[in-house]
Amino acid sequence: MKFWNTLGTKTMCYVAFTLVLLLAGYGSVCAAAKPPMVGDVAPDFTLNSQEGTPVSLHDFRGKWVVLYFYPKDFTTGCTIEAHNFQRDISQYEQKNAVILGVSVQSSDSHKEFCAKEGLSFKLLADTNHEVSSVYGSVTNLVVTKLAARHTFLINPEGVIVEEFLDVNPSKHSQEVLAAITQLQRSTPSK
Image (cartoon, rainbow, N blue to C red; front, top):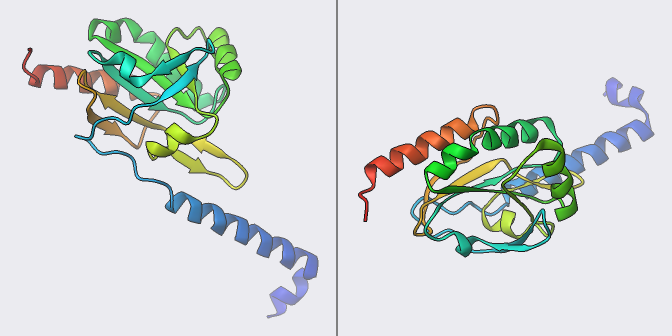
């Protein structure tokens, strides 16, 4: 009891307020939608790309799609992850795969990020958090929502065949390429 008496009313109010914010944020994270599961048809969507043009998931039927959600343009982990996807872009193209990155920043932010980092694949602006929510990929921080670092591998028929919910940005592109290679080997050609 002596400890609390030495803190003072102002400090105790600050501590209580901070705890309420943290608990509210924690509750929001726990209440977030669950991601679709392997075997589910990937939920379709349309979002604007860095060019400001609409891009729909169904436009890529017949191709493998690496749909990756990332927290924020220009941050260290997100830049590393994007650079590695760009480094490996020719390998994805050889496997008939496209990369679509999604975060909650605007098309303008994505355009600047692509220009600065030399990215040639599509980055999609989910400013209303709708697609990130449908894919269970929203992280609620105390003051803002960001996309969680999740990736969904979608086959040419539009079905989720692999999901990565615990992503290490440094190794992720190689991990996804390995998964595509394995899946293509085990899937008979039509």
